[in-house]
Amino acid sequence: GESVGLHLPTLSVQEGDNSIINCAYSNSASDYFIWYKQESGKGPQFIIDIRSNMDKRQGQRVTVLLNKTVKHLSLQIAATQPGDSAVYFCAENGNKFYFGSGTKLNVKP
Amino acid sequence: DAGITQSPRHKVTETGTPVTLRCHQTENHRYMYWYRQDPGHGLRLIHYSYGVKDTDKGEVSDGYSVSRSKTEDFLLTLESATSSQTSVYFCAISDGVRGVGDGYTFGSGTRLTVV
Image 1 (cartoon, each protein chain N blue to C red):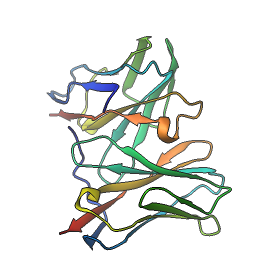
Image 2: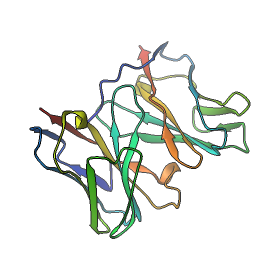
Image 3: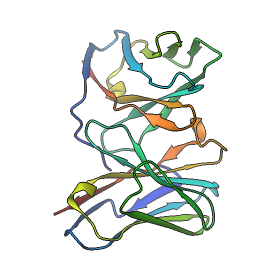
Image 4: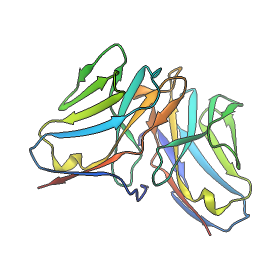
């Protein structure tokens, strides 16, 4: 598989702790947002999405928070596990679909 | 990923040579996309297709062309490869109108190196 050796912001957390990954988006007209996970050697994988008429959405162990006032999106991962180690990036969809460059999550056992 | 395969997985080519990357899907999805991923950038759209023989440019289409003669195959061609086209290329498919969300599936990527 493929991955890119990205010089990304890195978040290191202890296994079992909660992780918070942040994303600032650019287009105030964006009305749909997605978080993706990209493991080493793989393509991006959908985690969770949220529409602009919501400010919070929960999935299994993940929560996305949207603050439209400051154009900020966050992904919270509860009880982080080694399998959560990956690059996480957000995407926004206004009149176009844009991807952020991502944050690398390292989970320490 | 299930339902979408990219080939080749790795390729090294010389500057000035043509290169074709292939994306094959078994999901019968209408929409197919080619992205490139580079350090410091998010995924950037090169070209996309909304049906057989229907394609359009993305934000970084210069130097690339595409073709879609069958629903299942979307080809990306670099007519004359340059070093700036060294990248990891991802294909994606979707069945939605806006091509987003959990209907947006990515392939595993092709690492292309132009020397």
